[in-house]
Length: 390
Image (cartoon, rainbow, N blue to C red; front, side, top):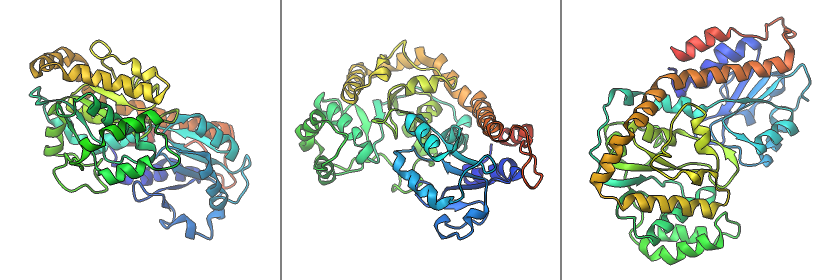
């Protein structure tokens, strides 16, 4: 499996460069800085960007939050798009915002599950670690970033505090009362009035913040970190409450977070936008509707979805640990399937999807022709697949 550090370079060398296509992507991870595989310098400082007629713009590390980001594309590529010049948006979400963006900016849509590749790289050692059922907590919930579009995490914690069930779980919250109060005072917020009132009512219970679960100081590679301490922590609780990046916006988008309970062989509640649990199942994973009420995945209203999730956490945490251990035993076939699927056929699924979607972009563009330099516009996809699967 290729490392995520070399992900774009390998794709460019074996998939894009043979077609004369340049690649621009975010670097370092999590920033809004762009680099090119051709010159490895900040795109904003390039004077010859228009010389590269064919290009992939990598926006697959983060969700596409809104269409205002498209204004930067005029700077990146002043050459008008025609049938001769291919412009591809590499992305990792399914949404109307993405479709509108591609239409308005004349991008071809190259969708693939970037965070699946990232998780397979970061958690590759997990396949050699055996799982066990010696749980000491009912649930586990990581809450690192809790502002702006991820402030729903504060609202969920307020609901758990309101139900007096924080103490039965392991919960992190990298904030303090002042930062939460500042979030509440923002004039434009996704938090409803009801959620704000719930947070204010329980704010005094957060006086001991920040709550941390990390063994070492938090830094930029938190999501990528996987070792003995992380795996032990992941296995210490019965249920993982997976707080995803996207919650409010109508997007199908998952990150490496969902694969932590899968690697640890634990059930999970997915706190995400509606439909993302079904989206995960579309990749061959199984969920836990036999034991957990998963109807929350279809609830459109954000408050109602949080209420349903909090109620299910409350119900499960009321069970004694011995009963939760018995539930884990009952869930073993599903837990084993998910773990084996992640380290097994899942990689082939996302590799096939990536290459087939890229081929579809080329098919739309050139109908089997060659470019002005005589380069074939159909790379050896079998060779690329073999490389990605090796």
